[in-house]
Amino acid sequence: MAGNGTAGDQLGTGSAAMFYEPLGVAADASGNIFVADYINNKIKKITPAGVVTTFYTANKVFGLAFDGVGNLFFTEYSYNLVSKLTPAGSYSIVAGEGGQGGTADGTGAAARFYFPAGITVDASGNLYVCDAYNNRIRKITSSGVVTTLAGNTAGQTNGVGVAALFDTPIGICGDFTNNTLYIGDFNNHRIRKIILD
Image (tube, rainbow, N blue to C red; front, side, top):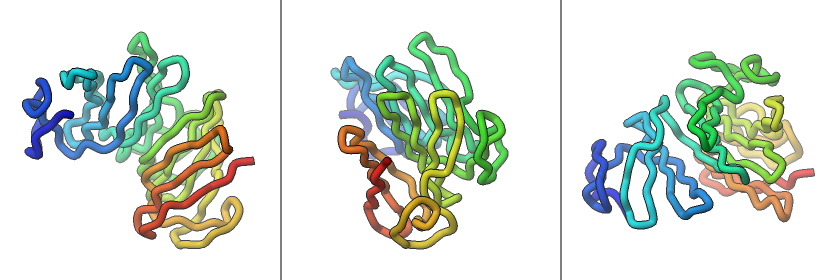
């Protein structure tokens, strides 16, 4: 669809475009694809015709997810932030504080992450984030309250809540019709399933 196998930062159509470590991907309601161009510190947009443009510039973007009204949520991986971009282009930080790593639950800037990666959003506006280096799955409500949904220290154990152990979870998607999250548990080489209450 876009790119040519050579790392770079080039806009254009199809194979004329270049990315440098593209990671997260999300699609909007019009069929446009948005890509976290990680090393280039950009979110790039790919139209259905394969035209690549820079949509937004941000720090080390990893995961992307659209909600039902067109807000784009994304993780700024090494900056320990979960951020939001409205359809009008207004940027805000949902949770975390730039450059401040940690494990604290809390609201907005009082919460801490340590390399947040994959992200998904449910129909109520709750976000679910792979907090990679904390080995946790975090939940952020629509009002910005961050809690630990599952995980604790690094490991590979099934269980409920903090009794379950992950090792660097980085990818996540939600099947919210069936109240289920699927997790790419990177260092455990597994796809894990979380059944939501």
